[in-house]
Image (cartoon, rainbow, N blue to C red; front, top):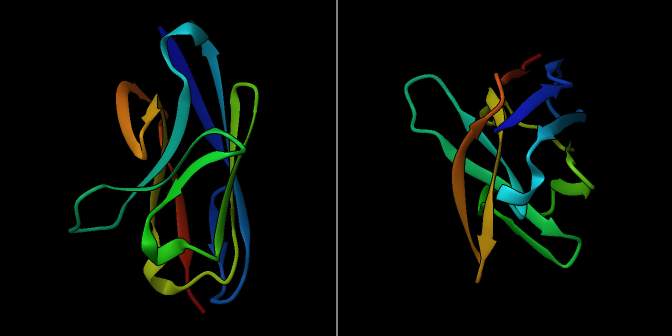
Length: 119
Protein backbone atom coordinates (compact mmCIF):
# COMPACT_ATOMS: atom_id res chain seq x y z
CA UNK A 1 0.00 0.00 0.00
CA UNK A 2 1.07 3.54 -0.77
CA UNK A 3 -0.32 6.64 0.89
CA UNK A 4 -0.08 10.02 -0.80
CA UNK A 5 -0.61 13.38 0.90
CA UNK A 6 -0.72 16.61 -1.10
CA UNK A 7 -0.31 20.18 0.03
CA UNK A 8 0.19 23.62 -1.43
CA UNK A 9 -2.99 24.51 -3.26
CA UNK A 10 -4.81 27.79 -2.93
CA UNK A 11 -6.02 30.92 -4.63
CA UNK A 12 -3.63 32.85 -6.84
CA UNK A 13 -3.98 35.68 -9.34
CA UNK A 14 -3.33 35.11 -13.03
CA UNK A 15 0.39 35.21 -13.71
CA UNK A 16 1.18 34.07 -10.20
CA UNK A 17 2.94 30.98 -8.92
CA UNK A 18 2.22 28.06 -6.62
CA UNK A 19 4.13 24.99 -5.58
CA UNK A 20 2.37 21.72 -4.87
CA UNK A 21 3.93 18.93 -2.84
CA UNK A 22 3.01 15.28 -2.52
CA UNK A 23 4.64 12.93 -0.05
CA UNK A 24 4.39 9.18 -0.54
CA UNK A 25 4.72 6.68 2.25
CA UNK A 26 4.39 2.92 2.41
CA UNK A 27 5.71 0.47 -0.14
CA UNK A 28 7.99 2.37 -2.53
CA UNK A 29 8.85 -0.78 -4.45
CA UNK A 30 5.54 -0.79 -6.28
CA UNK A 31 6.13 2.36 -8.33
CA UNK A 32 8.99 4.03 -10.17
CA UNK A 33 7.35 7.35 -10.93
CA UNK A 34 4.94 9.93 -9.63
CA UNK A 35 2.53 12.10 -11.50
CA UNK A 36 0.23 15.05 -11.10
CA UNK A 37 -3.26 15.01 -12.52
CA UNK A 38 -5.91 17.71 -12.54
CA UNK A 39 -9.64 17.79 -13.01
CA UNK A 40 -11.61 20.93 -13.70
CA UNK A 41 -15.39 21.10 -13.22
CA UNK A 42 -17.18 19.35 -16.05
CA UNK A 43 -13.94 18.03 -17.57
CA UNK A 44 -12.12 14.75 -17.55
CA UNK A 45 -9.10 14.24 -15.37
CA UNK A 46 -5.89 14.82 -17.28
CA UNK A 47 -2.25 14.07 -16.65
CA UNK A 48 -0.33 17.29 -16.08
CA UNK A 49 3.20 15.96 -15.56
CA UNK A 50 5.03 12.87 -14.39
CA UNK A 51 8.55 12.11 -13.28
CA UNK A 52 10.67 9.05 -12.72
CA UNK A 53 13.91 10.99 -12.27
CA UNK A 54 15.37 14.31 -13.37
CA UNK A 55 16.10 12.99 -16.84
CA UNK A 56 12.77 11.28 -17.30
CA UNK A 57 9.81 13.64 -17.18
CA UNK A 58 6.76 14.29 -19.30
CA UNK A 59 4.36 17.24 -19.48
CA UNK A 60 1.06 17.91 -21.14
CA UNK A 61 1.48 20.52 -23.87
CA UNK A 62 -0.58 23.21 -22.15
CA UNK A 63 1.84 23.49 -19.21
CA UNK A 64 5.20 23.11 -20.96
CA UNK A 65 7.46 26.02 -20.11
CA UNK A 66 5.27 27.06 -17.18
CA UNK A 67 5.23 24.05 -14.85
CA UNK A 68 8.19 22.09 -13.53
CA UNK A 69 7.94 18.71 -11.88
CA UNK A 70 10.68 17.51 -9.56
CA UNK A 71 11.20 14.68 -7.16
CA UNK A 72 13.17 14.12 -4.00
CA UNK A 73 12.99 10.41 -3.14
CA UNK A 74 9.31 9.85 -2.44
CA UNK A 75 8.17 13.46 -2.50
CA UNK A 76 7.10 15.03 -5.77
CA UNK A 77 6.73 18.74 -6.39
CA UNK A 78 4.92 20.72 -9.04
CA UNK A 79 6.17 24.28 -9.43
CA UNK A 80 3.52 26.20 -11.32
CA UNK A 81 4.31 29.61 -12.79
CA UNK A 82 2.52 32.02 -15.12
CA UNK A 83 -0.74 30.53 -13.94
CA UNK A 84 -3.86 31.04 -16.03
CA UNK A 85 -7.53 30.81 -15.11
CA UNK A 86 -7.75 27.63 -17.17
CA UNK A 87 -5.30 25.99 -14.75
CA UNK A 88 -8.02 26.08 -12.12
CA UNK A 89 -8.72 22.51 -11.03
CA UNK A 90 -8.33 19.95 -8.30
CA UNK A 91 -4.80 18.63 -8.53
CA UNK A 92 -4.07 15.08 -7.38
CA UNK A 93 -0.86 13.13 -7.24
CA UNK A 94 -0.43 9.52 -8.20
CA UNK A 95 2.24 6.86 -7.91
CA UNK A 96 2.78 4.72 -10.97
CA UNK A 97 5.07 3.75 -13.82
CA UNK A 98 6.77 5.98 -16.36
CA UNK A 99 8.02 3.98 -19.28
CA UNK A 100 8.92 4.89 -22.86
CA UNK A 101 7.37 8.34 -22.58
CA UNK A 102 4.05 7.17 -21.16
CA UNK A 103 2.76 7.29 -17.63
CA UNK A 104 0.78 4.37 -16.25
CA UNK A 105 -1.03 5.30 -13.05
CA UNK A 106 -1.36 2.80 -10.28
CA UNK A 107 -4.34 2.84 -7.94
CA UNK A 108 -2.62 5.15 -5.45
CA UNK A 109 -4.08 8.64 -5.26
CA UNK A 110 -3.83 11.58 -2.94
CA UNK A 111 -6.89 13.38 -1.65
CA UNK A 112 -6.46 16.28 -4.05
CA UNK A 113 -5.79 19.96 -3.54
CA UNK A 114 -7.71 22.85 -5.07
CA UNK A 115 -5.90 25.37 -7.22
CA UNK A 116 -7.91 28.43 -8.19
CA UNK A 117 -6.50 31.05 -10.54
CA UNK A 118 -8.62 34.17 -10.43
CA UNK A 119 -8.35 37.90 -10.07
